[in-house]
Image (cartoon, rainbow, N blue to C red):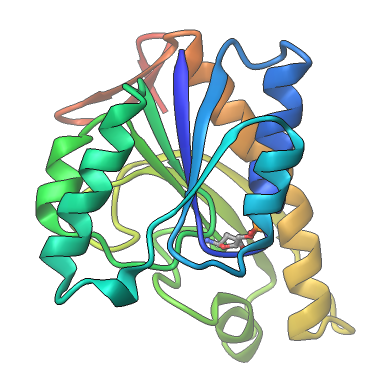
Length: 203
Ligand code: GRF
């Protein structure tokens, strides 16, 4: 399977996916990494892995629609089976989401449907939650609202800060994101009208 990864920053989730494709744990190849920011360290990670690293600066486009049209064109050059959002900090147009329906995934640092949007760790702490985590989901038109594929959780401890919690959740992201990609590449995952199925069973 061919994978295109979209990033805006450090790309540590990208890195584990690059590593696991190289090791053959994920039955696929990363065909390209695309960033909307020139300073994203993930672009360097792609170059170091010998993968096409492409910049598409959203600031050069008049509006979201024209940026996303150019993005679709760039992605489709690589003919991906799967598009992976790994810290891509842009809201997507319905056009783009529909174009990649069933083959577009995101990771979100909360136990969805809790805490869609930003500052999830702070919000979980402020709410006094005793558990927090992360979710991989298929992307639909509702921001952070698509059907969940897999989640990982961690207890919140009295001593936790936003930083410590963020670090612990980040480590969990590195475990579940490559797993979801592996399932997809092995054709074990499907997005049906009534939700996600793994090996034909609802998750
Ligand atoms: C992660 O926290 C992810 O949940 C969020 O963006 C961050 C990306 O981290 N959507 P990295 O660039 O993969 O290190």
